[in-house]
Length: 553
Image (cartoon, rainbow, N blue to C red):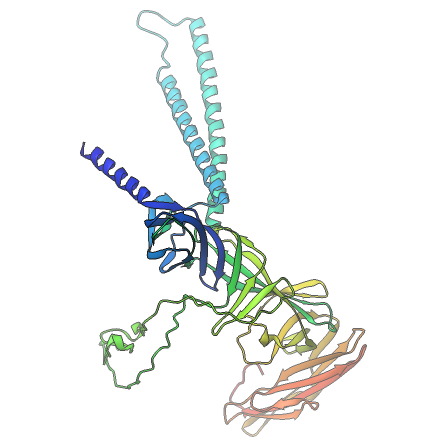
């Protein structure tokens, strides 16, 4: 009786909750996606009666940062409060693909249970038959006819049971294999356990019945984007075509269907608070050693934790920590000039601390954690081309594109797919966090440039004079251009640099190359005509004590 009363009370509370809050369907209109996190904006148009009204936006993400929820709108109403709740009675919507897999998994589990039940039935029947094989009694004997009938029965029935059990075993094995495939796919999709949904309750006050337009926005963390580039070069006389893309993902529990997307280079999950630099005091630390000479524990001074200083009291040196206070991020919108993109109509907003790309074409991004590519912009960039080679390490020549003006395009570092002469060369990484005016991108190897580096035995020698060993090494570097056009190529080589006063390195010949004495790097910049071969010579000597050995020399 008590349980019935409790259940009735629970339903009464839920009923009352549903009556007090007017469930309002909302639609996602815009998503601003950061490198980590996204701000979702929903809109709703509804009518409220005079007095106080509570509107509930339900079936929202359960990963909303409740501190970020904000509501704005138009209409003759006053917003009294905004509250974010988790609803454990309504589970988060599962993507269709995942639901199909889960339904299939349930089906196979059910079929396997049925097969296991049949196996048990047939096994018990087999046991029953085998335990009752006796066909004689104390009064009557067994005739040949009875024996034949019973033998036929045992043979036929037991054969039938064995066949059934074998068939059941085959089906069970196949179903288990299908289960394994489904579980592997679910694991690949990173399926999480059941999660609740979120809801936002907005309480309004109005003097009369009126129509209102509301915008509700909130920050979610299970989303983001990373840059991706397609770098295309038609030939060495054409500009570089750079296709700027974004790999977008989200697993918030809400499907984004044909929504307006803004990509931001900002990251609201990183604290914007500048750290404090405190005085750095040096002090001696008394080390306690055990009898075997091993370190046991380090004891010393310690500052207060709230000052953000290093703590070292009663802990091993490897366990020291530095603490710093954090701060909740804010979402800031800022207007700036609009620039027309080549790929599609994209508005670029240059904010104080980030750049926003306003994508004109609506996109759909399901809540499945998969990567979806969004086209951002396309640029044609002026580029100079040259070849580079380090024959000491690799005999191939590499074509390098030298791009200028890239620093005005608001690009982020990211992966790039390289294409040259309509062929895929490979993948690379554009490191754009540098201070150089020219961006260098390797476009791959050119086998039509033949490079050799050979040791000249006639000019290489080793001799001992007094207490020193003298070793002379000489190499010839040859470059042949089999292409139909002239090329510019940079060849790099090196000689060792001595860090020991007993070792002396002397340059003898380097064929008018640029020679950096500090690094030992030798650089030739050559213009090679079609079918031409150029040769350069590098000779140097090393003096060192005869009782010493220098590896790799």
